[in-house]
Length: 197
Image (cartoon, rainbow, N blue to C red; front, side):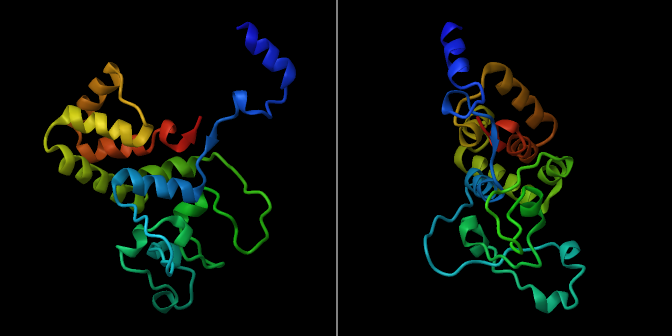
């Protein structure tokens, strides 16, 4: 494309917005996007924050596990990540996997990594599995057993677009051989959901 050559000459280092690098959602934005797609996000503004649930494995190194961490009720944990309590010595594992700021050090710029544990966390983390179940329940609530409507709505919620014919067919096959919840988990794991183009 002739116009692209002009842009390349003006911005060879790719600093301007005409052709930006793909950017992964940061830990907080990813958590909020998951809650939004599943229909669980509480948009209430202001008020006290919430203490997130942390797995027993993550609490293993603490001397007084039971007294050291008291998670807020589940309905409070649906709030945006902005309201999440952060303790320097203990951050939720899913958040640290996705490069949440180290709260023990000043952070002028956040690290961005792409590592295998991120894919594993997105497939196996308890929070992810719960959100895929909530997402599935949301689609069932909205459309009953209408698979086509469920698939189209899921694509709109996750990607802001409708599926093409091949995607719709593959989604129907996945739901038929597995479950609606598994389909939802796959969408929440898609690069199109996790990355901003």
